[in-house]
Image 1: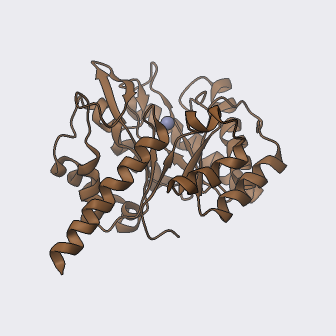
Image 2: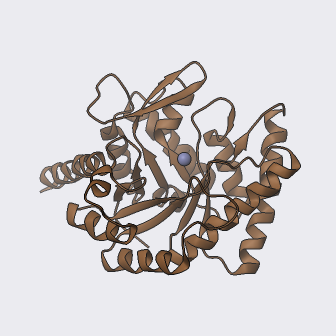
Length: 292
Ligand SMILES: [Zn+2]
């Protein structure tokens, strides 16, 4: 298990594509930049893996060689609170991602749980949990090791408040806590303004799921634009007009001795991932300076 905070991009950085890099080149290129995590995007997949097993294994080997921790973002076409056919296909999509995640040794499959639709929120959540219980037991029977990572969501229409994600993590055993801080900020109309706003969420997680879940969380981070119904679009770290500010999360990471994987979802993926890493390293250096 990692005992330090890792940083990396959500998907292949634009510059890598420009130089013609293949997927298996990505871990080496990230390592050369100073990054150590990568979230493979299976976001357009259907009910079968859309990567060949040999290619996935090759990516996994390169990641290991270059000390890059892999995660996977599952299909966007998942709704565990929808009609029966939709729920059945959604379960298959998660299983397809989990299968390929095992091939490449990605530790978690991140996914968007679903939409409330016409359901009461409590009912939608219960429906999602029962579908996930089936997915979880199938994963166990297939021997799939990746964790299920339902993500905190940024739109009012989506299942995935921090409380709902905590409940799912309590109910399903092979889960990994996934907190998208930009989404939390957008859902609550810019709620993350101070270090204490982030600290309160960390304390809630510690209270509900324990210190280890807090310390090992998987994070998505970017600045975000929002409207009345929540998330609109992701922005770069340098855009002062948008929040949240990464230095607030960096302070909470140090305060609670967390060692999360932080996946950058800004439009300039790896560039901003490196900026975040620098912000955290600067804080660590300041703290060590003050202590000596
Ligand atoms: Zn996502």
